[in-house]
Image (cartoon, rainbow, N blue to C red):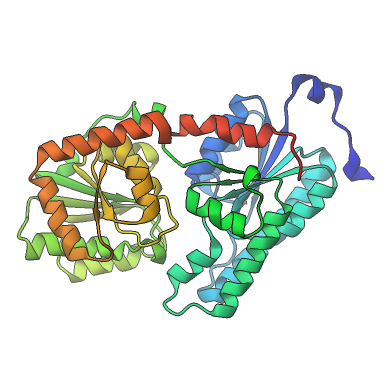
Length: 403
């Protein structure tokens, strides 16, 4: 069979692996977690192929040595549940076509699938039969994500999503996840505890240390409060706008600048909301910015805010705030609390008014801000930063264990 090509003598002698990676919902050049993983794989001598949607952000990777970028046209933009089904099926079809062509050219030692969505298990089974080891990188959980996006989620759809989740865990030789909540849920879905590794999504410490503050970002204000990330409905960025209005109008603090950094499906609505509330003087929504510019904002800011209400999420933004010695202000959720420990002010969700009062107290207490910031930076540099995750990630990729 053509799928049974043996490793060449050079491959065996050098111990290199060919790692193929599939990512669906964002392009390689935008996916911060995947970019860190690809860097680690290449730095350790592996050959890497990435199946990803076409994007101008991929340009820097198209000529990288030992990296092959297999791009496909972005799926059509269709709204609602049907739109997601179309997007996932189109992406799956492209992944099947591109990985099949790649496999016909040579061996794939490891397939890493970045999820959600949990639709790639048929492709995983096919490659497993040809000798490929399957690693699932589970960043989010589809049932929880679906429930967070819709006020009255369909029980039938939730059942389908859990069925897909179980199929995925049965095909995985190893699963990566970002926190304990996901680990426990994946065990419930059929994964063996010994085959799950937690690889948190902290920032690259070397890049953090290169950034300096830019006081001009505060413009005429004394304080800068930042929110960063993708703007999906489940991220509840609308609560940041409500927080800003409460602080500026109800609590009378006109010395604050709010920077809401990122893009996504909610960006236009957020800009309209800021305009409708008359907050343009104090609230900035510049859209997507490169990492270096985002980090410059964080190096300049006084407080980092998160308004997520998802109990299963370990917010990447929280670890990035902490890396820059920013006190974290957020709702009291299990995984956020587990990350932050003594580096955050936690408020009972979803009380935006209490969040505003806590923000004012932080701004008026520089000693507490300094203490929380120092604790957060220590945790990131000692435990949560990407360099601390790399050994666990590479071990999962290079293991020869098969289920």
